[in-house]
Image (cartoon, rainbow, N blue to C red):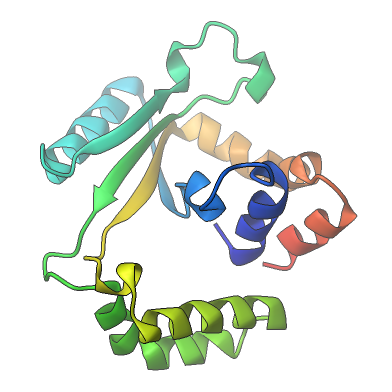
Length: 178
């Protein structure tokens, strides 16, 4: 998800959630894949489970193909798998931040001031140390698996979906600016 989509979720969807509110949105890093039939989709799901194994594994799975009434989701069907990723090389968040500092600075040149400030604030907190700085890097990542027909439909309706989910005009503006 882009920064502004995450910002909207933080201040609207998770406004009343307990601390730390950012942890309520676990699909920050996500990808999707589409297959031509259900057998292929199942095979890809099984390969994900095999790749991430028993130690990390699939942390959460939501299978919208099992819902009998999908009208509340515009009949959109997908399997959402949350997997835990850890780099093969043991690395702390502080080490990762230091190693990628120049890449972040280059990236931030293309971002707006709100995003720049948030990233620089996070980087300075990592540099200062603390619990997160010394923790091993691990991320929960979402993999959406869907059929090709749903993928095409998703692409065709995503613009309207952005408008529908916006809580107000500011949220809509932020969502389209990322």
